[in-house]
Image (cartoon, rainbow, N blue to C red; front, side):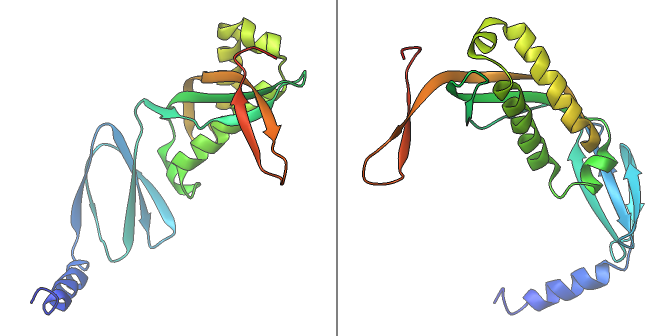
Length: 186
């Protein structure tokens, strides 16, 4: 019976798009309104009105957020194979750029932050990576901020959460390889 009247709901939704709607933007969010698919209007916190038939609205949280980054197998400047994972703490400082100039801004943050970790690790020796965590954190934060600034993102800090020296094993019988942790034993 429900599917028999589904067309009625679609019809009401279609005619409802001809009437303006209210939108509430929370203080922790920003929204971008795309009028006629072209004009971008940044919506700050508060109550806004829009016409659904000619306008689409996209939202994002702009307050402090934490993103865990996936593990990567990398090679240091002095030839050691390591696995590194990290995190980045950030906030969105330009919601219009973040939403309108990215297909998926949150995926972009993850990919770019992983690239920053890669860049710092492959340009460092194993001794540098093991020695100074505050210097390493500062380098990671600076590199991540430099890469994410164009996306409307402000990085509070970036750091490694997991770091270990590993050894790749190539099994006989094919190109299959595995990674095992050596815990500092070579």
